[in-house]
Image 1 (tube, one colour):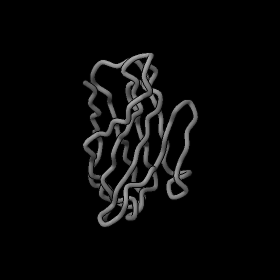
Image 2: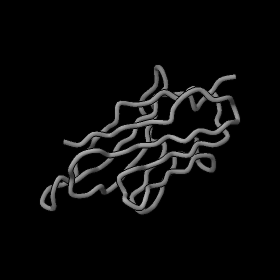
Image 3: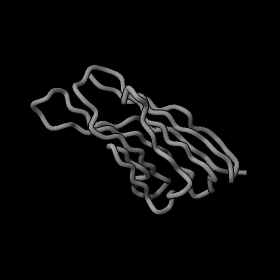
Image 4: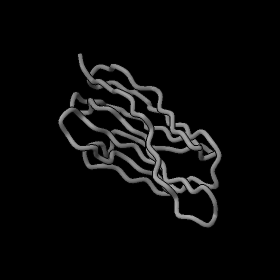
Length: 119
Protein backbone atom coordinates (compact mmCIF):
# COMPACT_ATOMS: atom_id res chain seq x y z
CA UNK A 1 0.00 0.00 0.00
CA UNK A 2 1.53 3.30 -1.11
CA UNK A 3 0.88 6.69 0.47
CA UNK A 4 2.20 10.14 -0.36
CA UNK A 5 2.78 12.58 2.50
CA UNK A 6 3.19 16.33 1.95
CA UNK A 7 4.64 18.81 4.41
CA UNK A 8 6.07 22.32 4.51
CA UNK A 9 3.07 24.41 3.56
CA UNK A 10 1.83 27.48 5.39
CA UNK A 11 1.55 31.25 5.26
CA UNK A 12 4.26 33.37 3.68
CA UNK A 13 4.51 37.01 2.65
CA UNK A 14 4.74 38.04 -1.01
CA UNK A 15 8.33 37.77 -2.20
CA UNK A 16 9.11 35.10 0.37
CA UNK A 17 10.14 31.47 0.00
CA UNK A 18 8.74 28.13 1.04
CA UNK A 19 9.77 24.52 0.44
CA UNK A 20 7.26 21.71 0.08
CA UNK A 21 8.27 18.13 0.79
CA UNK A 22 6.69 14.93 -0.50
CA UNK A 23 7.58 11.51 0.84
CA UNK A 24 6.43 8.19 -0.60
CA UNK A 25 5.64 5.60 2.03
CA UNK A 26 5.04 1.90 1.48
CA UNK A 27 6.32 -0.95 -0.62
CA UNK A 28 6.80 -0.57 -4.37
CA UNK A 29 9.07 -1.58 -7.23
CA UNK A 30 9.96 1.83 -8.69
CA UNK A 31 8.93 5.49 -8.80
CA UNK A 32 9.12 6.56 -12.43
CA UNK A 33 8.11 10.20 -12.02
CA UNK A 34 7.03 12.72 -9.41
CA UNK A 35 5.25 16.02 -9.75
CA UNK A 36 3.57 18.87 -7.92
CA UNK A 37 0.15 20.20 -8.86
CA UNK A 38 -1.90 22.99 -7.35
CA UNK A 39 -5.53 23.97 -7.20
CA UNK A 40 -6.77 27.42 -6.29
CA UNK A 41 -10.39 28.00 -5.19
CA UNK A 42 -12.76 27.82 -8.12
CA UNK A 43 -10.04 26.71 -10.51
CA UNK A 44 -8.95 23.42 -12.03
CA UNK A 45 -5.95 21.52 -10.75
CA UNK A 46 -2.86 22.47 -12.74
CA UNK A 47 0.57 20.93 -13.16
CA UNK A 48 3.26 23.08 -11.55
CA UNK A 49 6.42 21.01 -11.94
CA UNK A 50 7.46 17.47 -12.74
CA UNK A 51 10.64 15.41 -12.59
CA UNK A 52 11.47 12.08 -14.24
CA UNK A 53 15.15 12.53 -14.91
CA UNK A 54 14.38 15.84 -16.54
CA UNK A 55 12.43 18.69 -15.02
CA UNK A 56 9.50 20.58 -16.44
CA UNK A 57 7.69 23.69 -15.18
CA UNK A 58 4.56 25.62 -15.95
CA UNK A 59 5.19 29.06 -17.43
CA UNK A 60 3.73 30.73 -14.35
CA UNK A 61 6.43 29.35 -12.03
CA UNK A 62 9.40 28.93 -14.36
CA UNK A 63 12.46 30.65 -12.91
CA UNK A 64 10.92 30.86 -9.42
CA UNK A 65 10.22 27.23 -8.45
CA UNK A 66 12.61 24.28 -8.45
CA UNK A 67 11.63 20.61 -8.18
CA UNK A 68 14.14 18.05 -6.99
CA UNK A 69 14.35 14.42 -5.84
CA UNK A 70 16.67 12.93 -3.26
CA UNK A 71 19.28 10.24 -3.91
CA UNK A 72 17.00 7.52 -2.62
CA UNK A 73 14.30 8.78 -5.00
CA UNK A 74 11.43 8.43 -2.55
CA UNK A 75 11.03 12.16 -1.88
CA UNK A 76 10.44 15.21 -4.02
CA UNK A 77 10.84 18.80 -2.89
CA UNK A 78 9.42 21.94 -4.43
CA UNK A 79 11.48 25.01 -3.61
CA UNK A 80 9.30 28.08 -4.16
CA UNK A 81 10.94 31.52 -4.34
CA UNK A 82 9.60 35.02 -5.02
CA UNK A 83 6.13 33.87 -4.11
CA UNK A 84 3.13 35.86 -5.31
CA UNK A 85 -0.44 36.11 -4.09
CA UNK A 86 -1.54 34.15 -7.17
CA UNK A 87 0.56 31.19 -6.00
CA UNK A 88 -1.96 30.69 -3.19
CA UNK A 89 -3.49 27.24 -3.60
CA UNK A 90 -3.64 23.72 -2.26
CA UNK A 91 -0.56 21.93 -3.53
CA UNK A 92 -0.68 18.22 -4.30
CA UNK A 93 2.18 15.81 -4.69
CA UNK A 94 1.78 13.06 -7.27
CA UNK A 95 3.85 10.07 -8.27
CA UNK A 96 3.88 7.39 -10.95
CA UNK A 97 4.67 4.20 -9.05
CA UNK A 98 5.13 0.65 -10.33
CA UNK A 99 4.19 -2.14 -7.96
CA UNK A 100 6.35 -4.62 -9.84
CA UNK A 101 8.33 -5.04 -13.06
CA UNK A 102 5.36 -6.43 -15.00
CA UNK A 103 2.73 -3.72 -14.78
CA UNK A 104 2.47 -0.10 -15.83
CA UNK A 105 2.91 2.44 -13.04
CA UNK A 106 -0.16 3.64 -11.21
CA UNK A 107 -0.84 7.31 -10.44
CA UNK A 108 -0.91 8.26 -6.78
CA UNK A 109 -1.87 11.53 -5.07
CA UNK A 110 -1.14 13.09 -1.74
CA UNK A 111 -3.93 14.71 0.28
CA UNK A 112 -2.76 18.23 -0.48
CA UNK A 113 -1.27 21.02 1.59
CA UNK A 114 -2.26 24.67 1.79
CA UNK A 115 0.10 27.44 0.68
CA UNK A 116 -1.09 30.98 1.32
CA UNK A 117 0.83 34.01 0.09
CA UNK A 118 -0.43 37.12 1.80
CA UNK A 119 0.79 40.16 3.67
